[in-house]
Amino acid sequence: MGTLVWQPAAAQRFAAIGDYGYASPAERDVAQLVKSWKPEFIITLGDNNYDAGEARTIDANIGQYYHEFIGSYRGSYGPGAAENRFFRPSAITTWPRTARGPTSIISTCLATSGTTTLRAARCTSLC
Image (cartoon, rainbow, N blue to C red; front, side, top):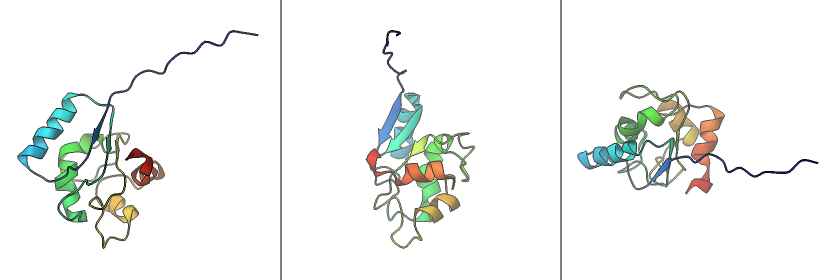
């Protein structure tokens, strides 16, 4: 019988951000700081789209600053990521109160409607 040798997994650099998502110079500065860390992925902690969490503001408030992390990005600020590297939980200001639900917002705004990203978007263990 062989010897079991434990080897730690490679470290990953990630960013965790919260209470963001209001298009402004301050938002741009924070996004530039986050990107300077060269994270492999970003998780958000909620309250991601101010003021009212409307679908029409997601691209300006989030996509503008983080499109290169968002898989299948369909907004107007540049190319998205080949693979989703931006994960957000459902939160009160992430989705509008009158929306048809997270699936409609994801498929029409920023991210892919694929099941991997959708599961990550609904994951509450990230917050």
